[in-house]
Length: 187
Image (cartoon, rainbow, N blue to C red; front, side, top):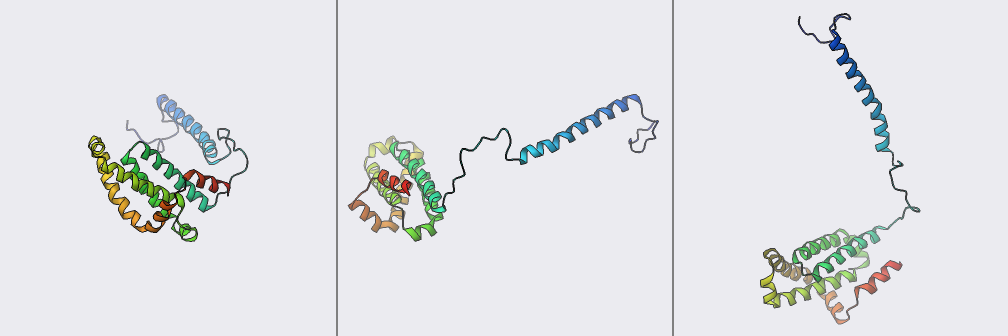
């Protein structure tokens, strides 16, 4: 006998095997259909049992503060990389910091270039000079670290040319970064 689709079959034509299979299929379909709405509700609801409870009201942060906080985090990462002479990390953090400065250009045009940025690029220029003078140190570096150092040497020259006046003022009267951070946190 030809196997036909169960849609075309007459009510009495099915065998017992087909009946048990179809019963299992329908019971599986029903159970999965029942679960779907519950899962959708769980996913869409932001107030689930698993969600951590917020402590206090939401904090509204201005765009300026948000941008400066991002830049300060990058500066801290840059300082840590400078301490361990990881020039690959220094190069990537320096690039990230310059992108953040470009992104916040409208804020910078209003309030001026952040002092912490001027201080970090001045310190970075000094570190590049000191490191390149120490030839033994450069020879001991890994290939990627040495390449990153040479790239940073060029990038620093190019970048610092834009901020010569600000760097000169900073070098005349250097101010520690920690003091400036404390001033910004009080605002």
